[in-house]
Image (cartoon, rainbow, N blue to C red; front, side):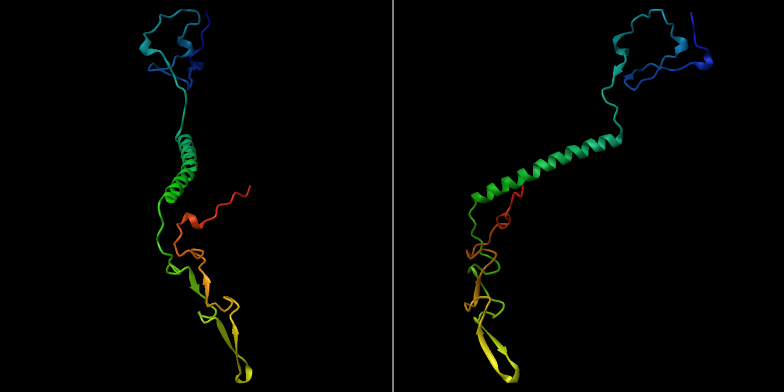
Length: 159
């Protein structure tokens, strides 16, 4: 019977087997002898995964990313649906619910006075508001009702 010299003895190791017994050495295991079966509690267990901390972090980040990627659009869709069901009666902030804003170029007069050289003045119609003195509110589009946050945004699918 061939045996391995003690100076060259090797240990059998694998990352898939866990056992409460120390690993067997080649020199101590006879090659052709049969061994009695050990009780079921001492059989080696097979480990499915051998995970280190970096792998666990990577898997966790991946799972969280997928959850956030699905959760945020679902959240916004439910908020839009809920907002559509509620009545909106809040007056617009920039125009105070009137639907019109004072022209900034003519300050609501409808005309612009230009001082020319030699002391002459020229009064002309405002080119911004076309003489009306006010413009349609750009926030509420003239309705006088403050739009909800998501209603102000126009979502386009540019595919």
